[in-house]
Length: 255
Image (tube, rainbow, N blue to C red; front, side, top):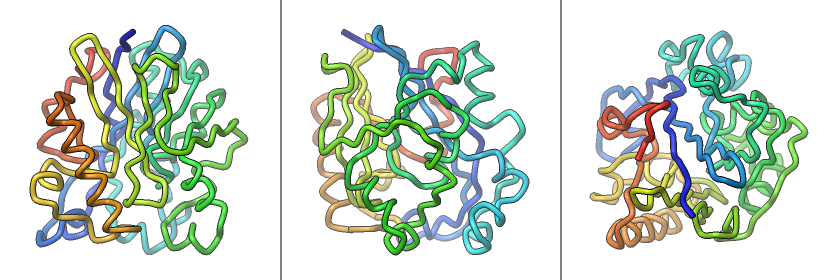
């Protein structure tokens, strides 16, 4: 069994490169990806981008500190995940699963716009988000993920449809329970890395972001991603602007 994979650019964030990769400086425009996976047994969104409030009042939603770290001027009125889905005739109300790589605002902020899906998240990520002290330290906001969705907490690798075509892969380190997603398409396997690997250079040079929950776990996750790549999988890097400019956008298949 294979699945169809579609890439959606849900706006961009302007950030500081030194926060994204060690030893660099300057500003960087970061694409905010979401992916639609269409499988005979259901539709899956891998990450949902940012909430529309980030466009109008980022400080009110995320606090002054985060609002100062990022520029939101490249997050337009049609860039939220609901608008991006509707732009190619997909109903956000008919998404079966949201697989959140993790619960940061630029990956789970659009969950509210996908009202009928079941969230699929690593158990350790969900538990961390329920602990106010850890949540504050990691940068989780209940406004992004506390909307009454059914939540399926998975522990480690999880085969979503039971046929090996859509598999959650634990890639801990960026946050306590970060996960990536392996998708088998007609052209071959793709691994959507999420923030376990911001850039291609993160993998090649092992230069991590500035803010990391567990460096050793993140390095181990990069080792796992590298092994998957060596075995033939194509990696889609989390926020790499150079990589992303060549990714076909929906309605064309991403791969």
